[in-house]
Length: 225
Length: 225
DNA sequence: CCACTTCTTTAAGGTTTAGTTAAGAGGTAT
DNA sequence: ATACCTCTTAACTAAACCTTAAAGAAGTGG
Image 1 (cartoon, rainbow over the protein chains, first blue to last red):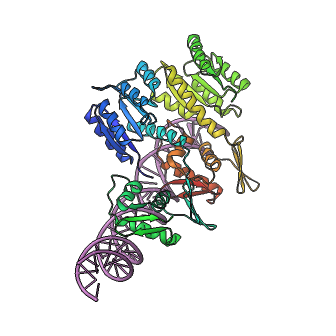
Image 2 (cartoon, rainbow over the protein chains, first blue to last red):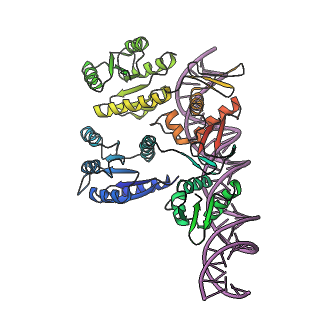
Image 3 (tube, each protein chain N blue to C red):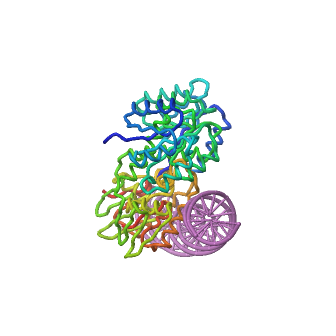
């Protein structure tokens, strides 16, 4: 699966870096902003999967930012977790009322932070009724089961091969260059040489036959229509 | 859906009334008890959908009450949320170990209380969606009795192994990653390392054979279809 | 048809992930 | 108290997977 992006908004640089470090270690992509205004601008530009928002900030405080985001059509469905210096019931209630999805008090335990983030993301994922089953040509790619079916036969591809196939198939017909594939399947900040894509394509062809993924020389690969 | 009933057990009458008021406003039915004993009696009589339990109480304290409930076949699957005067890591851990499902510290924010209650209920609803008796392959998993039957043989799995098996079996075919399993079987706010899942899977395989739970490397586990 | 670029294929090595074992902390039952 | 469970963790092993480099094949443009 492609990496999920988290926007962290906090005016304390040190904390920002600490959180970034921990989130990246968990495999998230991280965006940083140092005040509410900047945060909102960044959210609009990058559509992160979740926003982690400090309440106490200059320029525009966290609560205001929550309000802003909830008013904005583009942003209103992005989950928000608020951070605050100490447990402050009043603010907390206010935050939750304004539309944040969870609330964490400093000092932050990293484990707790990560698990809350994942819990919130999962809750949102479950809401989306996206089908995880693709049927193309004579094969079925079932992402719930991680199985590819082809004429009664089951193929259990390793994760990267499966994700690559799934991604190509979900964009059937469109030519995707190697960099795009790397970004979407491997993740934005992961550096691997682009030949890696070729090798995976080869493995897929080896298993399923070569009539599914087409090479477009000089550009990339395409799942045949 | 019919109204869900919540049993609130607390010796402070004022708080009891306050909570009742707020729960009713949210559309719950409310039962009240003023000590552990009374609470348990009431739980047996009315089978509430959730119990909200103060830890500090005369007669029988909250932790004892949790224990009692977890031992009782009728009551053992009713979710419990504990209330306590202040954050106390030790008691919290103890409470969760004894089998409560969540933990809230006073003073209580109404919003938070409601949202935790709904979260816990949601988790349990998901579990209850399926019948308590699953028949898959040649085994029967009976969650009313906590027994797995396999060709005339009975297997009494420990709680966690059982719940894990049950959860996997109830989502037969779907690959579930470790984090999801931890959250659904162990609970959202409980932090254990994900290798714990592996160990439990191993124990299950050891007892029932390894043809039920499949590993999907890099992703998670799946109950074979 | 030659030179050049881009892809394919192979195989090895390194990394990541899962399996396994054992030990310790708690709890429970005798 | 003692022995026995259950759950969790750490540490080691084993295996699957991913990545890379490099050599050969296939296209492409002059």
